[in-house]
Image (tube, rainbow, N blue to C red; front, side, top):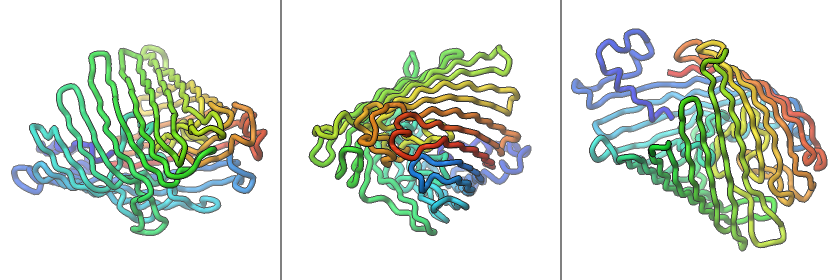
Amino acid sequence: MRYDEDWSVLAASGIAAHDPLDAIKYTPLTDDGAIYLVIGAELRSRYEGYANNLTSEETGLDDGYLWVRSLPYADLHVGRARFFAQPIAAYAFGVKPEAGPVDRTGLDLLQGFAEVGMGAEDRFVIRAGRQLVSLGSERLVGTRYGPNVPRAFDGVRFDASYGIGKLSVLWAQPVAPGPHDFDDRANKTRSIWAAYATLNLSAGKADIYYIGTRNDAAVWNSAQGEEKRQTFGLRTFATRGNWRWNVEAIGQIGQIGEDRVRAWSIASNVSRTFPKAPLTPTIDAKFNIASGDRSRDDSTLGTFDALYPKGQYFGELTPIGPYNMINAHLGANLQPLPDLAIGVAASDYWRHRRADGIYSVPGGLLRSGDLGTARHVGSQLELTMDWQPTRHVEVSASASTFWPGRFLNETGFSRNIDMIAIEVTHKF
């Protein structure tokens, strides 16, 4: 979310002298500083190597590919107005059988919007154009930053900040990346509208929200057709001493074809840091339930829709998405050096309803629930490393293994999925 960064501090004389990149980042265009230009960029290379695949024998081959992307941006401030532009150059090498929309988009416009602030201290802001959108914990609307091509929306957003809270209201359509240069277009078959409020309370913070969505071609295990969903949610999150928590409850109603929608999800994340212990460990526990469909024969669809979730939802390796899913996660992070973090995490996955299938992170059906009766989908172990040798450079690596459970074993092709990933990012 580079447009949220505030680099006006560089207006002070000499403050950027120690870093040559800071010296070119902020450029005043008038003597009074009312008009200024901020530039920046991200260059990222990421290699992912896989052994086997979840979906079928044909696609279960060993696979290794390289993602490369560049995200430069220019942010022009003119008084209370701003104009933000961020092109993207994203390419993929070695993806089998072929690169998809999250792998490559060529050269295109990722973000381009105009924004105007109103009221005291710009408490009211209206923005129109192509933009990345992140709401809350990104369980329902996220930037999809992990994959090579982030998710953008074409639309209008209004933000109001006052007193203890902030309210965001938006209407947008997701952008569908094309394989060639400058061919990304809004997906006219889908749209989203939302009102999202964040409150700063004495006991912590709370999000209260409503999200409406339309999908003209929704496909689930037991229903398909034109779908309209209304999503209501409540989230509470805070940090108290060495404890941190994040708990979210979500309900969904709506219509798909002739059937009604009744779905829900509960997600929780509690962590504890031990600052005086060697390596400053942090223990992290998560438990998530996303409802599934009870029966193909009734007139109610119970499959929870994660809408537009973050890409690496359950970790670096995320073969299964948050639909008809019970997930338990336990992890630990260690900090042997100030600029080095090492993590280990174990996860388990079960189907919430036996009649429903399992889905990918974007919501595509991977295995039909008609094929098997078992609940257990699989188990996963993951090791991660993050190193930031300089302020502008970050290096990360991960190694993951997913063991198929009884449901995958009884419904067709299933082998252990092994993945390694190495990523280098330069950002200024």
